[in-house]
Length: 353
Ligand code: GTQ
Image 1 (cartoon, rainbow, N blue to C red):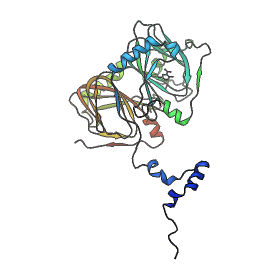
Image 2 (image 1 turned 180 degrees about the horizontal axis):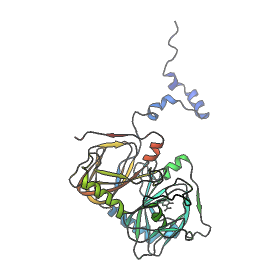
Image 3 (image 1 turned 30 degrees about the vertical axis):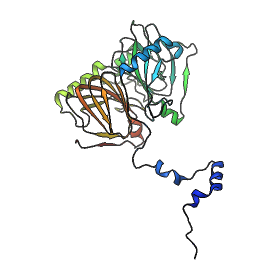
Image 4 (image 1 turned 90 degrees about the vertical axis):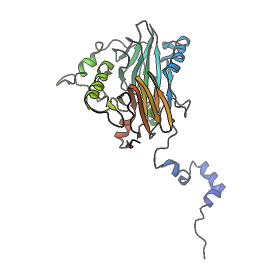
C-alpha cells in the first residue's frame, strides 16, 4: 500500500527546492495566504495624534532654518508611527503642516497627486491655482486637484500654516507620479481674477453654454469656513444628533455631487457638548483635525485628547468614538471615494454600550 501522496511537511523540508524557488523568483502562496487574504483589515497603521502645541514650535523653527523657496514646500510630514520614513499617515494618504512666512513665495509646480489645504493659522496669504489667487482664512478648505499649477504666497505680516492632505502614498503604490516645474522656478503668471472659481461655481449654478469645464475635476476650489460651519449650525438647530457621528457633512464636487477630488473625500462634523458618539468603524483610514472644542477620541483601546489644532489618524477598520466636552467641530479626510469607486468601502455601526 502506498503511503499518502502528500506529506505536507515535505514542502517545508525540501531546502534545495526552496532555494531553487528563490533563485527563480517564485514563492509558495500557502506560506502567506492567511496573511494576504485576511478576514478583516489587518494593516500595519497605528492610531496616533499630534497636538498643535507640540508641532507648532518645531514648524516655526523650520521657518528659521530653511526658506520656502529653498525647501520648495516647507512642510513637516505627519508620519504614522508604524511606518517612519515612509511619508504616510495612512496606507494611501499623506498629511503635513506647511509654513509660509511673510514675504515668501513657494514656487509653482503641478503634479498628478491631488492635494487639499486646511488652514490652521494666519489670514490672507494665498494659494494660486493656474494663476488664480485664492486668499486663505482659518479653517477654509482649499483644493488643488491633480495637474493644476499651484504656488503659494504670503504678502501679509503674519505666519500662515495649513495642513496639506495628499494622496502621495496611493500614487506611489500605483507608480503614477508625474510632476513639472516652471522653468523660471517662480510663481504662475496671473490667471483668472482672484476668487473667480468661487464666484462661478459656489452658488449652485452652472453655465448653460460656453464656459463649461473641459474635465470632471472639481472647478470649485474653495469651501470657506464662514459658509460650511453654518450648515452644521443649521443641522444642529433642527435635527437630533446622529448616534454614530453627531452631525457629519461631505464636501462635494458641484459637477457631479461626488467627492471633492477623484482620490480624496473630505468631511465637516460637529458633536454637541456632552454627546458621546456610538462606536463605528469603516475601511477608510481617516485623518481628523479639530477646529474647535474639546473632548476625547477613542480609537480601539487608545484614547487621545482633542483640542483646537489636534490632528488624529484612525486607521482602517479601527473602532472610533468621540466624546465632546465642549461642542467639537472637526474636519476630516480619507480615501473613501477611491474605495467606493472600487466597490470596497464598508462601514459598521456598532451599538452604543
Ligand atoms: O503644496 O504643492 O505637503 O507638492 C507635499 C507636496 C505640499 C504643495 C506638500 C506638495 C505640496
